[in-house]
Image 1 (cartoon, rainbow, N blue to C red):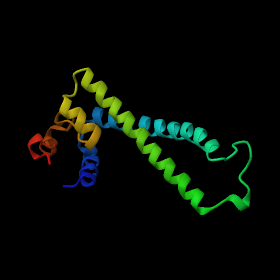
Image 2 (image 1 turned 90 degrees about the horizontal axis):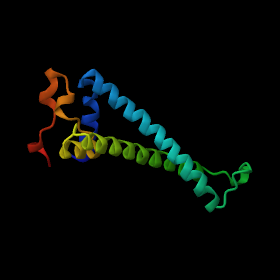
Image 3 (image 1 turned 180 degrees about the horizontal axis):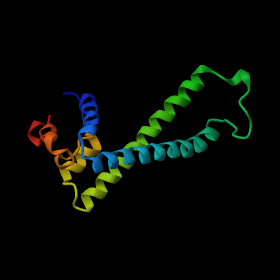
Image 4 (image 1 turned 30 degrees about the vertical axis):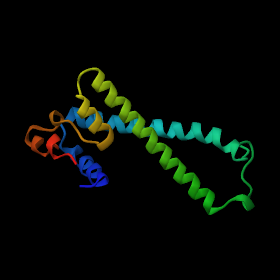
Length: 135
């Protein structure tokens, strides 16, 4: 299974988690997205003057372009995803440091969005990926 398919499969497993872990995962996503938006604003306010864009003046109609719009939206999405990844990684490290994740679980939660087996509801634990099936 390729990496992206595994991420989507693991995301689909969110509904199979115990309620407290499903809620925790949701809050991690909300915090990560907000952190990503904050990171985008910080990067944007430092990057735009470097590109010669004055933040105190509106962009004139002749300087507007579809490329600028596409660049802005793409940059926003990429930096937001980076912020989300950072927050997930910090959470995984915290869980590892407090002994609630093994090193392997922390790595898989951060890089593959794979939930630990004990997070699943009892009847769905068999769906948790096992270490032997790793590629």
